[in-house]
Image (cartoon, rainbow, N blue to C red; front, side):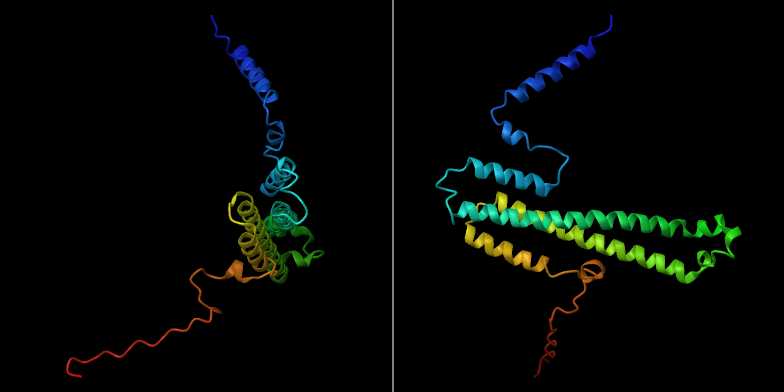
Length: 211
């Protein structure tokens, strides 16, 4: 006799749905969706926390109000970086495919070599490769900025630090993030000490036993 596996599964799903509907924290449960960015989740949680806070806590100029604005400021930056990151990710993938398929295009359209001489041109191939590398550099740059900004949002959300030192720390980090595009973040070796201003002190001369 076959086991009623399907009816049991349907019953479990029904009970799970009922449990979710009877949850007293529907507002918080409603924002839990995988189809959003980390920045979006943290921003929605900050909004819910602001709505639950006492009116006294959210009065004009209060720490809770300023913290909400700080998180929203970070959210604006993270959302912008995510848009640029997604754009250059698509362009870098497209350019990488073009680099891999470019030699094959020369073979496939060999009969049109007289009409399309640029297919076999080394200069054209080098240009396509350079564009692919540039798109990857932009993608890596904006992905790093997005991750750093989302980490600052996590710090602002979960930290129990007072607002004044917390805001100083976050604003300092935001200043370094907003410096603009920097190739050093993409191509510098971690062990590189260039442009650090560090000077190596000369070693002291050995002391002879008799001296």
